[in-house]
Amino acid sequence: MQQRTPPWRKLAASLATVFVTGAAWAQDAGVLNIYNWADYIAPDTIRNFEKETGIKVRYDMFDSNEALHAKLVAGNSGYDIVVPGSHFAKQQIAAGLLQKLDKSKLPNLKNLDPAIQAQLAKMDPGNDHLVDWLWGYTTVGINVDKVKTALGGPLPDNAWDLLFKPENIAKLKKCGVAFLDSASEVLPIALHYLGKDPYSTQQADYDAAAKLLKSIRPSVTRFVGSGSDYIDQMARGQICAVLGWSGDIMIAANRAKESKTGQTIQALVPKSGGLLFFDVMAIPKDAKNVANAHKWIDYIMRPEVHAGLSNTVFYANPNKASLAHVKPEIAKNPAIFPSEQVLATMLPPGVPDQATRRIITRTFTNFKANPTAPVFAPNGTFTVSATGGASATGGASATGGASAAGGASAAGGASAAGGASATG
Ligand code: SPD
Image (tube, rainbow, N blue to C red; front, side, top):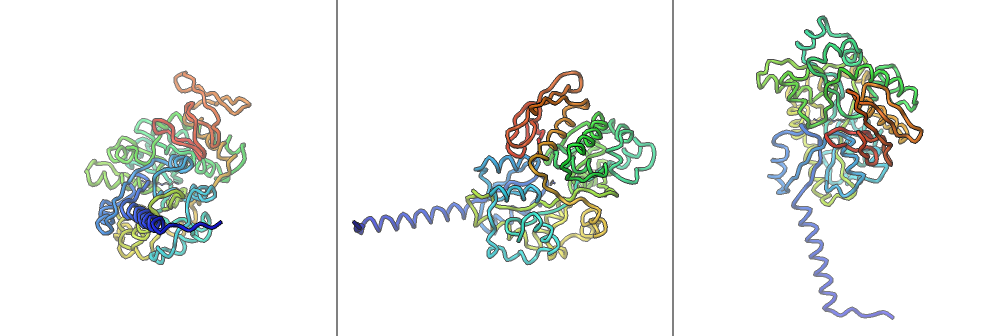
C-alpha cells in the first residue's frame, strides 16, 4: 500500500537536502588538500590561488613515488590532488584509485603541448585522468671542481660511467656520493647501463644489475629522496656526485650561486640517456573537494602559473602557451628543455608487472642493505650481512616486494622508517 508523506515531512526532507547540499558545497568551497613532491612549486603559486578563490590550501610533501603509492592504496588519504609519476599513475588508474577529470571544468587544457599529451596518453588513454605538472629526468649531478679533482683527469664521455664504474665512483666516495632511495629510479638505469631492457622481466638481467650495484655499493655514502637535504648538501659542497633529479640538481646549482658557497654544481645529460619522468596532477577516487581540485588544475595550466613553476624549480612544463613567460635563460637551457635529439636518447617511463616489481624491490633492498651477496630462502625471505658484520633480515611483503630492514611494505611498496623506501 502506498503511503502519503505528511507535508511537514516533505518540508523537513527538502530542508535537509538544502542543508546537506549546502554543507557539501561549503566544504568544497573552503579547502583543497594537496600532496606533492618537495621543492616543486613557486613561492606565490598557492598564495595567488588562495587570494583569488578564497580556497584554503593544505600542502603536504612526499619523498618518493613509492610513498605516495602506498598512501593511495591504503585509501582515505585525505588529499584532493596528488602528483605521482605517470608510470605510477598508470597503475593507480588501473587499480581505480584515481577519478576521471571533468574536462568541461578545464578550459586551459588548450594550452598544453600535444606532444606531451600524446606521451601521457600512453599511460592514460584519452588523457582522462592526468594533467602534467612538470617533467624532467633522473640523471647525474656533480660538483664540477670536486669531481675533476677527485678523478684527477677529465670527466668520462658517458656521465653514467662516473657512478657505475667502480674505479670512478671509488674516487668520489671521499667527497660524498648520493643515490636516490627509490628502486623505480635506480634499477631501470642500471639495466640500461648494462645494455639491457630497462624494464626487463628476466631474473637473469636483475642478477646482472645486482652485480653491478654491488660493485659500486661501498662508494655510495647516502640514499636520498625528495625533501631530504641533498639539494642543500650539494649546494654546500658536502655531496660531490648524485644520482638525482635534473631540476633538483639545478636548484642546488642556483642555491650555491645565490648563497655564494663557491661550489659549481652541474646536471649532466648522459650520452646514453637519462630516465624521463612526467609528474602528473590527479584526483584520488575518494577526494572530498573535487570542484576545488579542478579549479586548481585549471589554475596551474594558466601560462603564467606553469611558467612560474619552471622559473622556480628548473623543470620543464607541458604548457606551450607558457613559454612566452618562461625566463629566456631557462627556456633556452638544454638541460631543462632538452632538444628533440637528446630527448630521443632518454629512457621513457615504464611500468613493470607485479612479479617484476618484486624482483626490482628485492634487488634494490639488497643493494642498499649490503655490499655482500644476499642469501635467499625458498620462501622468498632473505638474509644479508650488513656492513660491519651485523646481520639484517628482510621478508617478502604481502603485495608489493621485499621489505627494508625487516619492515613490512604496503601494496606496491611503502616508504620504510627513516626515509628508506621500497619499490612499487
Ligand atoms: N623536487 C621534485 C622532484 C620531483 C621528482 N619527481 C620524480 C619522478 C620520478 N620518476
